[in-house]
Length: 197
Ligand SMILES: Nc1ncnc2c1ncn2[C@@H]1O[C@H](COP(=O)(O)OP(=O)(O)OP(=O)(O)O)[C@@H](O)[C@H]1O
Image (cartoon, rainbow, N blue to C red):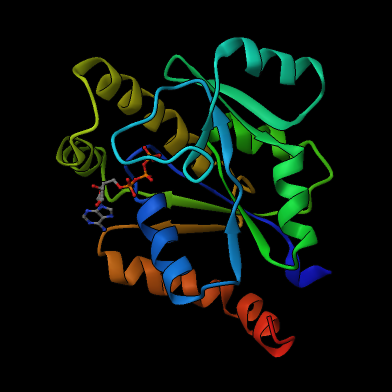
């Protein structure tokens, strides 16, 4: 069904993907569901297993790769991240719109699959603003901050390539960014509401 195309959302770490998605899920409960990724990175304080991520050891992650269990997987900032096929299928089967939050290599990999997704890029107003937000979030060591900022430049360059994303959401003022995202997705959640979901 065209209206249930999965949504792939990407953007540099700290650009505000989680913040925007949280607002969307709050305003439209039951419409969208976040595909929970697997990762080998350690949980941050307050993160819940099975909700934020499935936190797994590297050996488990590698076994899933061998078993062809991932739609996409990639290394980022020294850790592995992946979207399991099961996670996406479960959401589609439940009649909700699946949202995938993946980094640039994940985007490229998903594009090479038959997942008929729509691609969104959340762009920070500037690298300086991004650094401030990441520092403000208080989750980064000096090393992880540097890695994230280096990757951010690559992600911004890719987003400039024609056809890389269907929509670019500039997250300067949060409310403006959120309204834009919501506007683009309105056809999706309206069709779900009409269907009584
Ligand atoms: N428009 C905004 N203005 C100011 N601060 C913002 C804005 N959007 C998000 N933030 C803040 O920036 C920080 C990073 O946002 P968030 O954690 O949502 O980023 P993310 O893209 O999900 O990062 P990651 O990929 O590392 O999970 C958070 O502390 C958040 O509160």
